[in-house]
Image 1 (cartoon, rainbow, N blue to C red):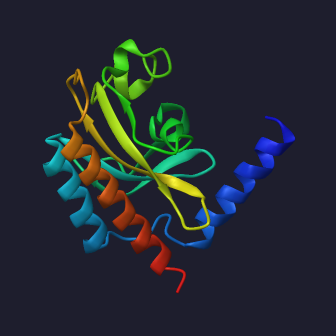
Image 2: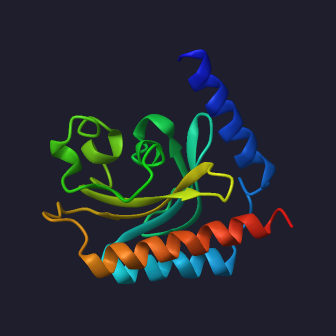
Length: 164
């Protein structure tokens, strides 16, 4: 990793840790936003995924039991590098994700769409994502994309209130 990239990632991780949100208990407002994302996008899985140094941890989740996974199997870790909706219509066909354990084994995820959770200070903490076990040609429709973006903004507002 280049020195500049290392410094940026160190600052991102420091910001994430400053919110003291990792490994906290379930909270109804976050859970409600994840359920709304799942319903809006008609997917079996939705997550608020926070990207730590070596794992992705789920502040809220529906459709999976695990509360974290290793970073090397995290599509969300790719998504946070984008400044916009990140979609992969078929994870098994994309070279960035085809060999990930969550694609090859249970739950055999195939579709991913996620918005980066970017703070007012322009720091990406994670993503609000929806996931399907079937490929989704065309991805999300316009209403789903807009709604997911609004829900991601609401997640960021909840996180930033922790600093108050």
